[in-house]
Length: 309
Length: 237
Image 1 (cartoon, rainbow over the protein chains, first blue to last red):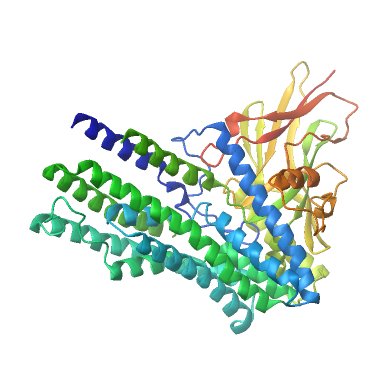
Image 2 (cartoon, rainbow over the protein chains, first blue to last red):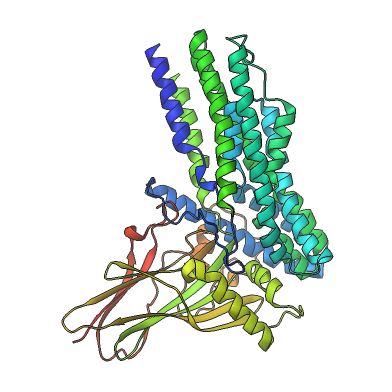
């Protein structure tokens, strides 16, 4: 019992320590936007990471630059031959870019983790969640660039910068409200004994409606990385390749995002497995996870919403 | 059970912690110290923006979309840059004798477009008078603390990153290898900077010492990145 309890505390601490909190900010292009994100992480005392991670991080930065350099070269070749070998190379690189790009701060990984830590999920649901968030994330940026360029006849980059802020606010607002709703439901379930009536089995998995709403709300924030590639394609006059590349970027990002969902689902399962066999511990664990995750979503949404003004 | 637990923790650490590097924009920066009769005048910087970032900026300033900058468009680029990067202190972090000097302005800005890349040239004023008998120490790092941008230092005379410097540039027959990134980074100059640190202006008047130094006290982005700084020490002989 004590060993099991220690294991749970250890797991809880590591989850808390490792949650990708750092992404709680939206990226703003410093070259064309005078508003800098208020919570830009210039200083954060509560950190100190091992040196080897810096190397890994540097490597990823270089990897992204290398991919972009190669994409620029291929883009010029596509100008000459729209559907030659370069086109497929461009698609492959877009996909790779998506996978690496989504590892970076942002892209709603904190929400993905909170969501699946709070509710039991299946791998299928993790996959659906990852794909939905990233598809809408890329689609949102794509839409802004296209509307800016073709409808407003102005700068696509500026449309992204300016309207992006409003989309972010809507997204944060929905997430804050959704978190409150999930919190309320968790409390209701706890009071009425629903949700963990079969104490030793997994309770009902996360319901589809809240999953889809959460995923779409996260994805509402436009992805600046994908948008840059589209903007570049637009300028070079290879819009079809640019649009196809958006699908590839989204697929790549979906893989990374789904991986995070899978991890959270596994951790949730491990918590409940550790608590199995002891009804009161199981119920407490379940309630703590559900409440904690829901409150985390709500608090983050509210904080980001307030910080965006 | 403990084994599985450790595995989970490992799984959690790896993806989350590799997750910090997220630059969207890339700048190659050539840096030099500029001296005047009194001491340090400031820092001259030469930035080459990557093509995609250049496109995003041109999208705003190149209003007639002719992929060239007219005089009016150059002025617009000047205004946009001076205004936008101000909140980011022009990516220039300075310590004078260990004390922070917040960069508030740049002067002498000129922007041009070359091979689809925007090139910025400007001076960051940072006057530090040489004092008799006392060595003045200045450390400068160029980075975007929001990490939207990845700034790499390049040697003067180089035109920033040139992918064709890669020995395997455009070589379709070369097999892909795990060390590709390393080779590319080295070939195009994304590595720890070991190049010259030019000092221009009235250099004859002072005893000068310069070098590159890692500055853990200037760590940024959640204290994870320790910047490489340009270090200058000068005093009256």
